[in-house]
Amino acid sequence: DAKTTQPPSMDCAEGRAANLPCNHSTISGNEYVYWYRQIHSQGPQYIIHGLKNNETNEMASLIITEDRKSSTLILPHATLRDTAVYYCIVRVYGGYQKVTFGIGTKLQVIP
Amino acid sequence: DTGVSQNPRHKITKRGQNVTFRCDPISEHNRLYWYRQTLGQGPEFLTYFQNEAQLEKSRLLSDRFSAERPKGSFSTLEIQRTEQGDSAMYLCASSQLAGDDNEQFFGPGTRLTVL
Image 1 (cartoon, each protein chain N blue to C red):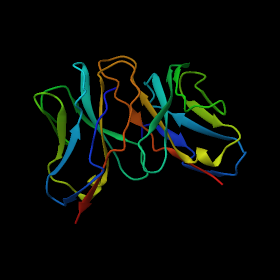
Image 2: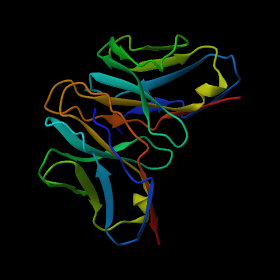
Image 3: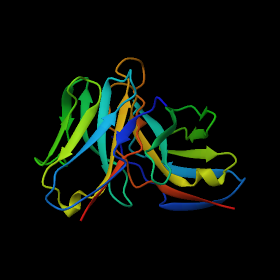
Image 4: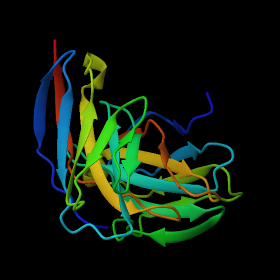
């Protein structure tokens, strides 16, 4: 799996958009960008994934640059419950794939 | 709740004791994974089952660790002769075999403390 680089921590004011960056300059053509989050004392939770087009679901939006070397996860209106560690991962879509997690970004949503 | 369940949620043991954790995956999921997570780190892959077959083991899985999935449903992870370095959160995840994606659903984890 390609490696990713994320800032170790970020703060965001409640109600504002949280923009979490991720660099993945060695991503391969068949690798997707996945985002998970882990709320304290819980298992990781899938958020969203994409290949090259921007994606949106009920939880977040994923913006992938045209060269696919970086991406941004956007939580449009952060709440206190969004305080968590966010992991950016790149891997092949489908089939068996163990997930290789890094350290992630600790997002603190501030009241 | 039809999510992944793990038992126990917390386990405290003395060094040298054996411990066993159980994971019940989502019922239609054929793939099952075990991960270990230490404080401040992301989860690390330990082992993978497809149905009852253990298809991959990480180098992290020393000979004191053994995982089973006897009937292709629930799985157990046993640690023999526990050491203080085994203290961690042990996470189980499951995913479907068929279909285009293999999105993994994680359980809440078992937190092990070795005294």
